[in-house]
Length: 444
Image (tube, rainbow, N blue to C red; front, side, top):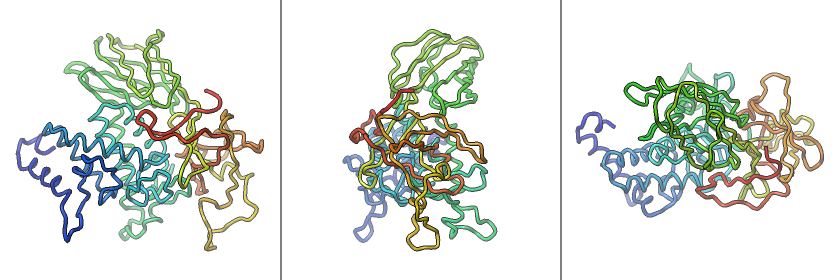
């Protein structure tokens, strides 16, 4: 970046030297992960010598070097690493890493450090800019609405070090108190890093290419962009998304103008309808952008309805026999707080050696995959979840699931891998279905 701004070769030379030293060794042992050459050989990221999360930041330099030098090998290596992580080390909640590094196992129940997920999102922003692949924006949305929301207390006072798939949420000030300086117990690497998950939204929510604008983020609010020297465009969204699938967008250019507006169509939405000023559009394909090229006038309206039917990701390895449930981009979780009528007979307490936060007091029933037809739940007490859905368990009694971002907010244990009966066979990872989810039950 300094080279592009100043034109001085010394900055480019330094960047190239750093990449060359990825493969350096001392006493026959690697100093780093040789990320460029290993990726070009098709090696999975977790198999590289140093697959820790910190390496994602220098790996981002590969994308920059592609832009600067035009050499395709930097792009190839960068994309290989990104897809490897998406396949083998991105968890069900959009988090990255198991015990602060890649392990090649998305079902690994080790801690998912907040800083690791933020680094994964930063890497994904560069991947989105490099490829223009809408699936990358789907991944950013998954991480944002689940992991990033789940990292933060609703008060804004604290953030987590670990936002596990199953477990409890604890303030990073408790989990990594050794990092704190005297007088600042809540200041540590995670607490200052997690807000980037929200801040980075400005890096990917609305992008621009040679044709016009790419709308990646859906949610209430107004996004603005400078499309030309004398043309600004505002996109105002009226929606409850991600809680509901109806999205209404008012397009307001500063003057009538022709340009393309590309709408991200999530890969998980099997039924989609899009209309402009009431006229339905054809050619809407999940996992792509819908390109709408026309002369836009102030007040033009886009109406989009996404398929929010529940889907499941059937687990394997440590999560064999379990499944994750999604509604739209939201991962659902069982939180003991909303199911107090389902409690184990022998209550475990924290002061015994065998206490396990992922099982404490939890008597989680199974849900029938063939009958995933939830009803809106109601919570009148303090600190309600963003989304509360009531399912019918296989024992005939109701069971309540909440959005992952709200799970564990009150300190109660939660699980996002739960028992599902009559689940279809596990789906392999694919670039068309990176979440491995399948739609079952009733369409919404």
